[in-house]
Image (cartoon, rainbow over all chains, first blue to last red; front, top):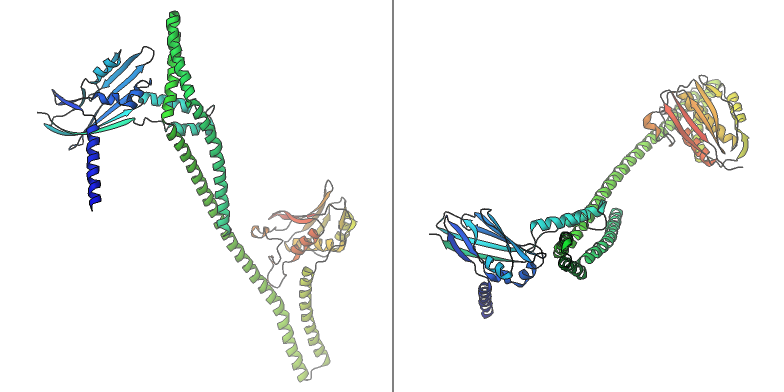
Amino acid sequence: MVRPALAVVFSLLLAAAVRAQQPQLGFAVQPGGVIAATLPLSILQEASVRKQLHSGLTTTFLFVARQRETRILSGARIEIRYDLWDEVWIVQKIEHDRKSERQRLTSLEALEKWWRTPLRIMATKASRVALQIDLSVLPFSAAEEADARQWITKSGGVGTSSGSAGLVDALIGTTISARPLTSYRWNVELALQ
Amino acid sequence: MRRARSLLTVVLTIAGATLLFWLVLHQISSVWLDVALRPEVRKALEQSLEDQKALRSHDPARRAEYRKRFDETQKLLNRIQVLRMNRQAMLRRFELALIVVFALSALAAAVLLWMRYRRAQERERREYLERVTSLQETARRHAHEIKGPLTAARLELERYADLVRVDASEEERARAQESVSEELERLARYTREFSSFAGIGKPMLRRESLGQMLEEFCTTFANAWPETRLEDSGGDAVVCVDRDMFRQVLVNLCSNSARAGASSVRFLIIRNGSRVMLEVEDNGSGIAESLRARVFDPYVTTRRIGEGMGLGLSISRKVMLDHGGDLVLGATSPSGTMFRVMFGAEAC
């Protein structure tokens, strides 16, 4: 009888510890009911993310915000690519209203500073919203995925792609997709007025 | 049980083929993937990037060229990195595809086997019914052939007894006696026909002139079938035959032609290298389509019960097979029939 109770307590403690480790988003409400999130630096500094940032591929941060009551969806995207030739960070933010902003940053410090600028993820007329926000950190962009897929199906594989080898290549090529390096979920309630 | 065994054989064969295919292709794909994704390949490409960057400082005039090479190399490196991150998923998909191929092949094989089994079952049922029907027909013919003379003989015997009782004349009694003998002779003839079928002997082969045999046959049997003319087309060839048996074959063929209303039967000798054939062609009404496949089977006949047992062609083919040759139906249509008598190639 004691053991199950201990297990429950242990699980609760573990959940609390995990929650404590989860990076915390900052929120700001902008005019027009726009909710902007301030991203914690710890996401960018996470080991797998940091390693991927230097790979030359476009690391993509995909935000999906869902209103829990209305199930209205909104989202935003951040793309970061380190340009190995010019040794600059090419960054782009695509916010909830598809407004995008592209910049070239010359240092990691500049990147970290830019990272902390608010990202507009949703606009709402409600005075109070309960949000579930999911962040997936993808190792490459959709364009890079498509390029690799095309490469393997058209010119990759076993020699020239023809007949059954082409079919196999095509079959395998379609498995190429960006699986998240890491992902986060936040549940927040915000009062807008 | 046999079906299960053949299904198992097919499934095992497909499994073996799929496994072999998997081994070969998996090895090739793995090698290719491993080569492409080897760390040294990546390092070499990364080094190449560094080199292009270093070169731009040493040779600023060719900066654009180095940039182009750099971009191409980086693109390649990016692709390899994307593949590296998807390696497991790609291999899993490859294996899944093979499993699907195997499952579909096994399913197709099972369906084919099942269809074959159903067809064989249906055929077996049909053949059984045909056999039983044929046996029924045969039994009916036998019964009729025996019952006719027996009934007639019994009636004649009763009549003979009456004649004895009334003390009829010697002449009348002799006639009744003769009548009984005739019926018994019919029975004897009937059994002789079976004896000839059951006891087709081994042919005594001798070198004979086919042309001469045909000429003699046409002369001897010129009036055997009054409505049918026998025509010898000439030509000659030496064949190994049992003269009497071969004559019996010709008699059977001509009897059938005459029965089919042919006004002429033509004999044509054909030589094909060392092989000799004789075409026997008539202008009769031909053989019904339903009978063509079974025309050489015993008891297959268009004649009514009591008019014959349908053993002629069966006996004839057996005779020619015993000669090392054959008898085949060459062609038949409502305007005539042609049988091909083939002689054995061996010398005698």
